[in-house]
Image (cartoon, rainbow, N blue to C red):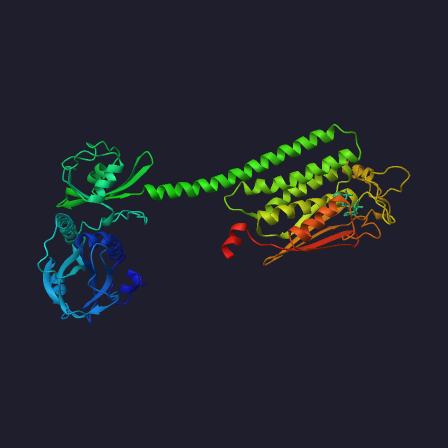
Length: 529
Ligand SMILES: Nc1ncnc2c1ncn2[C@@H]1O[C@H](COP(=O)(O)OP(=O)(O)O)[C@@H](O)[C@H]1O
Ligand SMILES: [Mg+2]
């Protein structure tokens, strides 16, 4: 839809301030149209030479039927076509009359209201409705039209629309939601049935006519501020769970507040929905937080228990179990920070790397680095991925740099060897390096122990590589055939749980590569079904 400024372009030289005034007027036309049960059109004169007017605003009432079925925005009319309009423009006062409606075989009543801004007439607002003969208006209609007439006089006087830009949300009340009118001293003159209901929700049952909202026991209403500031003020009133949005629009006459239009809307259900949505997000975060806490407790218990065992297989197994649990806790830690159930896997990596470095510090200080982006993924992918990566990084720091190169076929010693073995990149040599002395590394001294993790995401595919420059895999090793726990876990996670493929081979050290499909969270998957 064309904006007001676009409609004016090339047709008139209206200054910026006038355009803003007209924009605010069109913004308020919903209320004016509903109050008058009529279509409203806003006309701006076209600059000479051709003259005439262009329609820059069209609003239909929600309280009544519309007169104009067609879209009139941008339509140009000549002075002869709309003589009432031209008269109102040149006289600067309201002109009324009956006109035939070309598209229908009926007549319409048209009221032309000149729009004044800082003393100048800048546009004409017309109220147009089918002529209804023989139908008597009820009280509600009379009150609404009465308010419209007062606001129309404000338009002519240049006091409506108000100079302030009131940011109105889609929740702001409209005429259909509930209307009250106040007199010049803020007492209720009229209340529509919906407004009465809203007051009931706020606990007010006594007769309301003739009383002010404050006398009815409502504190903090927008009425005093609106009367004082001569501009509309909105406020949300609450009583327990009930929430009612109140907007007070003062009606001015010759610089004095002579009354007010108060629009009210029961927004209790909207607020309840907001609270539910907010509550659900908070609850999801809380659950992740608790899962993380519980996993950390389990991991601490395992650590305590491991410490009580003498060094050896049993203790080693418990320490491994402790790290596996901790790698899952890391994922929940990240999930508990946000309300989404997606995680950026690169946020998880630093914790996993730190765990591997801690382990290597004890044996061989290998440098663990990473590169690339894994992107976002659901928790159901991130968790097995974290466990698998943890396992592979641990293996690299644990096994790659302790065995003598060229080790033939058997499992290397789990512990650091310092017996008669030649000085390789063993623990002893590196402790020396840590202390800042130059230590001979033996035949492999050019190689600093390094582990590198590369991640690469293409669409829904994630490729991961864990590469070290250590001793390489034992001869005859195959990932398919291995029965040891750590790599069996990795194989199971990659092949079965993640539905990917994995390979391990020697290339100046050990290289592990796997590719897995990375779908988004369960929620997205459900949405796709
Ligand atoms: N990066 C690596 N460098 C050298 N050897 C490795 C590497 N990764 C795994 N291995 C070998 O594979 C074996 C099986 O690993 P794994 O299943 O994790 O069991 P564990 O770590 O408990 O020994 C290890 O004992 C080791 O011999
Ligand atoms: Mg292992």
